[in-house]
Length: 150
Image 1 (cartoon, rainbow, N blue to C red):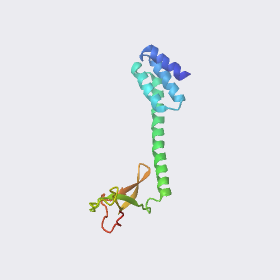
Image 2: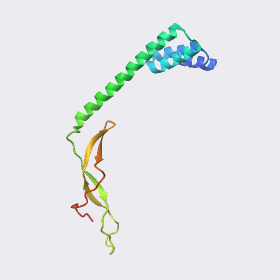
Image 3: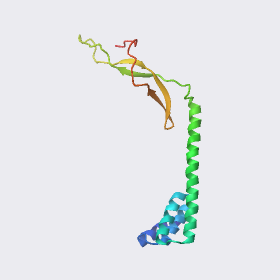
């Protein structure tokens, strides 16, 4: 209710009221959103420079917002480390079957469709953005010695 009232006050004042920006900043604080609270307190200070109460609340909100961002950063890396241990990425290998160009041409039209040959591809499993991904080494296909699958 306080947030809606502060938004309505901002709308009615055309964004020129320091008090409306301050009240919405306080509503953001109560909603545990220190980053938006600090932004609204900054807007209030533009309209009422030097106000000690707004400055105090803005500084407290900015400090809290930086703590939240830091905690999120460390929590994400802690989560990624746990995921890496779970996936055992250091010792994990994968198999990728990739289509390879084949020199064989069906000139006698024995086959209904041209099908590519599968070949074994050397690759490593790496973590990319917290997810495992198979990374092909140099994108080269080991066609020699690959079974002929026509």
